[in-house]
Length: 135
Image (cartoon, rainbow, N blue to C red; front, side, top):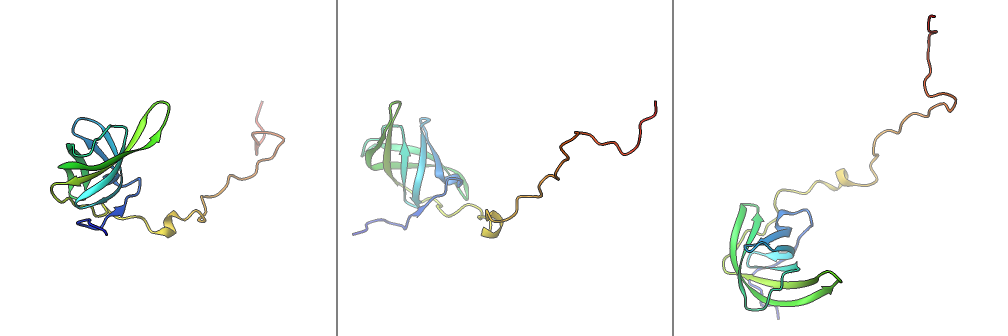
């Protein structure tokens, strides 16, 4: 049974909403978001039930929104850090729509030519003179 207040969407790494910041300075990577919450990944230890303030960038600009950690778990262990995933429930709705527009696929297609290659050079000399130099 899905109890979400709004549909969520996956965020691309280039979207402004994909990066958020805690008011205390911790960085959050937003994996997916809706207008009422977000699934985030961070090295900050966020315990369920904790209230926090999060700076997010939406299509309307930068917003400070109050939220609560709905659930959290360790998602990755590394020798230098512990990574947590935390689901945040916002107290007010934010604008989680796509900011701007994405370029058409024809422009970003890897099959398009990347320019013209340099002309082949003769292997004998680096510089060729067309007229004789006077002595």
